[in-house]
Each structure stands twice: as structure tokens, then as C-alpha cells.
Image 1 (cartoon, helix red, strand yellow):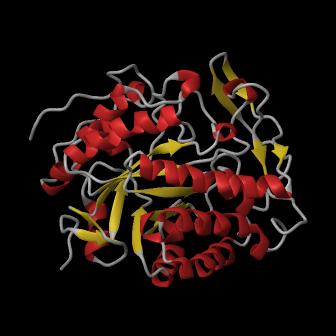
Image 2: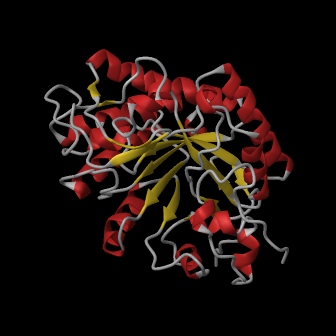
Image 3: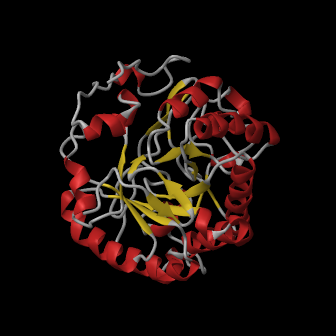
Length: 355
């Protein structure tokens, strides 16, 4: 029987176990330079016992930054700073993928340099607010991308993927979830286009498919993963025909042969779709399951039952950097201090006792 503590081959990259650290925004980059700080290297190195670390969302282009103090991968300075992080993880025997996250309409001009403005498939503002250095501010209608600008956005993902490999990452995860740019194209509530990038399911999946193809062509499919969150309403996303949408997306990207598909399960009732996607996808399957709580090892049974190849844990990894060992022993678990969830200074994470 396969267990969470068995190694696995991820398209040529050996993972020591099947426990993944899910991507989580940490907001510890250096201001406008958007370079990760020394604390970022320490933070990820502490968690190198994960079979796979998926980094916080990293903006592939400057206008893709959605929150203050989040890191990028579009400058030489950012590449050099990330190399310190990947070296620290590899020295501890870990594996780390960079999550490429273009926030699209989620953001604010006050967060961006110069005259940059959040962009999106259509000029439809998201409900809600975003935190800026001047406090919370309401989302604004994004600038609608022209056809040429859509293609430039695709190229931006590919360029950032190349930068990630240069920075020492083992691969990249394309963020197609949580209401950011790729899901904004997928969702009919935020995509009102009538050209080749909107309208039908075939057209709404086109941007995601083109990004996957471009990244895989740039760095190899074996270094490329995709994260999706079917039916996720985060960031004011409204999807229709969810099952048809994601089935079509998987059918379109399957020939590319990417390394993994990472599914954020938004509710337990979405399990039938998860199982269908699992059946349709030939590569490694990672599941961030919908659970009542994250402080036990119950989700690891999903590996033993064949529901998924890896299980991704989020907040539990913040409070428990040595989480695989704690899962093996079913605890003890530290409790996440919500005050340290985000920035919290260079020591903004919980010290933990050795088992």
C-alpha cells in the first residue's frame, strides 16, 4: 500500500515523500524591488522536509502584483534573491517550485509602480477591498487587455518560468485558481469578451491553455504544474458550467504532458469532479482537500485510497515547519497564531520544539 511517507517520482524529480506545502502569500518582499528577504530563505529552508514546497504567489510581470510586499520574478535582482532561497532549500534536501501568480484585476494602482494599473479580461471590478500601504481601498475596474496584450501576458508567464529555473527552482506552478488572472478568464462573471478569448467554454479556457503551452515550451513540461480551484468564489469569481469548463481545460492541456495538476477542493461536495479530473489526468495529482480541520493526519488516507498522489497542506505548515514528522506521529501540533499569518517582521513565524 502506498503511503504519504513513500517517495515519488515527479516527472524526473524525486520527492522524498508525498506531503506538499501549499502556496501561501507571506508579504515579506523588499518594497518596490519585490525581492524576497533573508527571512524568506530561512522560512522555506525550515520546511524543506516537505516532499514538495510550492512557493507563495510570485508575480511574473510588474503589473501582476496584487498585494504590497509580494515578490516577483521579472528582474535580475529578483532572480539573484530567489537563488538564495532555492539554495537554502536544496541544502536541506528539499524540492521547491515557484508559483507564478498574475493577480489580474485583484490589486490597486497604489500598489504598482508608475502608471501601471490592474488588468483583466474585461473591465469588471471585483467586489471588495485590497490592503495598500495607505490602508484598505476598493477594487477598481481593470484595464481590459487587448488581444496583443493577452499574448504579452502569456509571454510574461513563460519569461518568468525561465527566470525561475535560472534562480534554481525545480519547476513552476501556474496559478490558475483563487480568482486571479487565469481564473478571471475562465469565469463568465469576469470575462465578458466576445473575441477568441471569451464567450464559449473553448474560448474562455484559451488563455489558461496558452499559458501552459508557453511555459512548458520554455522550461519543459516536466518542470511545469498547474493549480486550479473549480467553483471557487474567492475574489468575487462567478463561474458557470464548472464541470464542463474544467473537463475541457484538462482535455486541452493533457497532450502537453505537464508534471502535475494541483486541485484546490473548494467544498466536500466537489469530490466527484475531483475524482473525474484525477481519472482524466495522466501526470502526478496533488490535492488540497476540503476538510473540517487541518490539525490531524486524516487527509493522508486520500493517498492510501488512491484519490491523490500528494496531499497539500497550507496553514498547518506555518505553525509546524517539520510537518511531515508530526503527521507521521499524529502530532503534537502547534496552533497557528493568526497575528503571524502575514508579514510579522523577519521573525514572523512560530518557533517550534523538536520532536
